[in-house]
Image 1 (tube, rainbow, N blue to C red):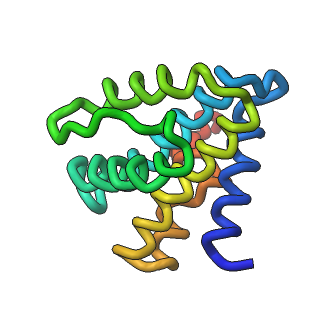
Image 2 (cartoon, one colour; image 1 turned 180 degrees about the vertical axis):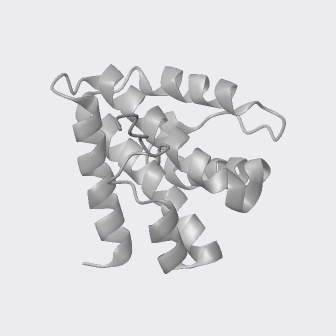
Length: 143
């Protein structure tokens, strides 16, 4: 299994885990947006907010040929929050299995594009999707 196939399988598993026991369309949509925000948070310091937006736009363009409901109006000046809201609206009418498949393809396309730009090892380190975003260490106040 190649790196791209492993990434997509990891993302699919993560989507289902994050959606929880409900695993309905809305839960998958929320998990997709959550994972995307996690990716964007980790990528912005490295490639900038504009770079994150470009990669997301390109991934949407690539996956929308297989999943037309992912096609969102492309506008370089749209705020990412508006784009995510539009994505949620486009996904809402789809069945759960299709949403899992399309969301996995979208998030995988993001990672593939990133890997083509910065390399597989750095992409793997930046987007360790199996773990939540790093949080500050817990300080022990006990003496």
